[in-house]
Image (cartoon, rainbow, N blue to C red):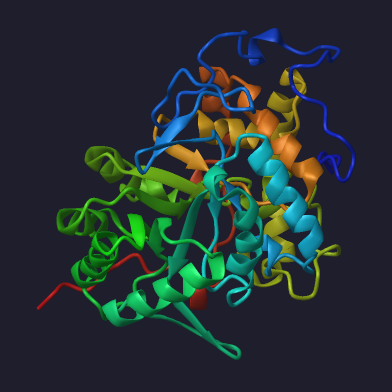
Length: 377
């Protein structure tokens, strides 16, 4: 069994520090262009990486996924989460990613508390389209709901305009052109600056973009989830000049090497019902981490940093948004920007995590994203 590798609550050593046996080729040379992702500029962020462009604005090398601060991964701690949000902005993180359904509005309100003090520092991306009522959830991408949801998000966030507004899920009833048309109306009204889609097919993305320019498509993308490559979504995004925002780039914690079994998961942790984290599938997937540990050992990095460096190596239009509610993990994640994986490293990791070797679907069948879209009559 592989050893635990996530740093827990301890301070995490920066990859640039001294480390016995570290391969110097893993470090980006001082003053060199650090990352080949999204649109680079010469202005470095506080993390040491050049800024990128999203929705016409320079943003940091990593965004911050905020969902876990409200639910799905154990208990809330608002004070700790607010400290992480401030620390992320201080470190040059620009994109804060949320949604109206995270904590049933709680997540947006939490971010709103931070924005009251530093609105100009953040590029806020939120989403609509998953509705909740008690224990029931359903998708609604109708124009009527888009308009109402946008107004509610603006109130919770305490902002005049949302930087990037995603359709979280399409409902299978509303033509995507109608949904995007409503979002375009919100742009014209000054309530939204840029629009995005989440978990859609390549064909749907093309149809949406023909209705109104799409700034970003958000999909799960990591070493062990590469559907956007095999399904052609990344290729379509590149064809159209649309950024890919990669959520769960750490494989819901699996790629950190810290999750050995299900014993430490909270009763309401989403992974308890996720097929990849059943006892059988988790045990079958653990050997895949050997390749990550090998690269991490050579580079003097953590497995989490290697997994994030792999995402950064995928192209100039991929922006990872790892989520965390711990300062130590935030520091560890941001330090991944200093790791330069070789072509051989990337190839070895690709081979180790080829889709046929990964056990279990990425969502339960009942909540697996439906990337199809209805055709307007």
